[in-house]
Image (cartoon, rainbow, N blue to C red; front, side, top):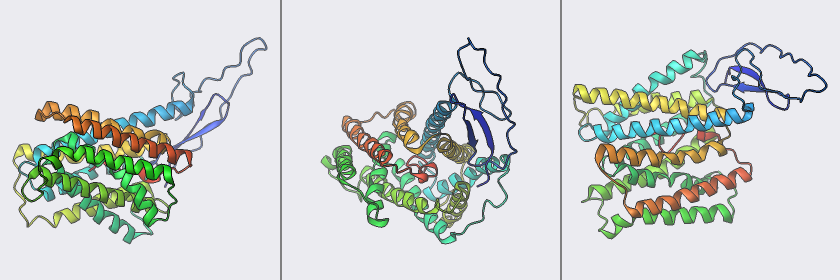
Length: 369
């Protein structure tokens, strides 16, 4: 992918190149000139202000980039949570297929603006893997549909807690489908994480689990199906990132998902009110902005550093659930969430220790819808 480039000076005196995931080619950065310090002066090398470089903050460039990546990840989680809250609000009357269409069609707006602004529009749809994109889009659209259906039936914290199982399922699928060697440590984390999921589901199971007669039970099934399919999508995206640009993967998904969801129009779409139309537009735009934040987060920092901040989404979901719907998470959900999050964090830790950087994390997220 064409990238914007800039050079900054780190404390060791090395030129560090900063690239943009969506950016277009940029000219070479001017050479930095340093004056030799006086013999009695202590040697200090602050970050220089060169054209297009990171502004002076007192932090070394690598640390500044890492903090920027973390901030982008937190903003991504916040934005996706806002989008999902709107899905729950509008889903009381608008069919899921119609919401899916708005999410992906209007989500294209900020993404296309970003691509055009960075000058990388040319060749963005060029691909060597059309079938791979189609496979990813079909499964991704199904996952998103189940996810939205779960949100309309469960509280935001409950649905979010179940979605945290997706990274654990991905570990198992990577071993089964990709032949990745998964040793006892990560398998143990997966097992513990699934026990956490059972704790989350305990209130539903103890009350008589009936997916055909209970909306909440059906919501649990939809959330679990979404988590499994999202894990499968992550496997597909991991394969695509070997040859495809991030912007290409994102755009093909948005376009294909909008088309696929449009096919549900004959099956109960409604004419939205002015308020509902505004909410549909807003949730789509928020989804696109969240995708930009997500992509940029993994440009600035390593995946293993940024990924744990995905779990900040539970904080935002609890707040939104209390403020908008007056729903508080049950104790079992809180306890189970802690177990699942701990298992997920341990998987990230082990993958970092093994040197397994996950490129698909810059494109997919359990919260993105």
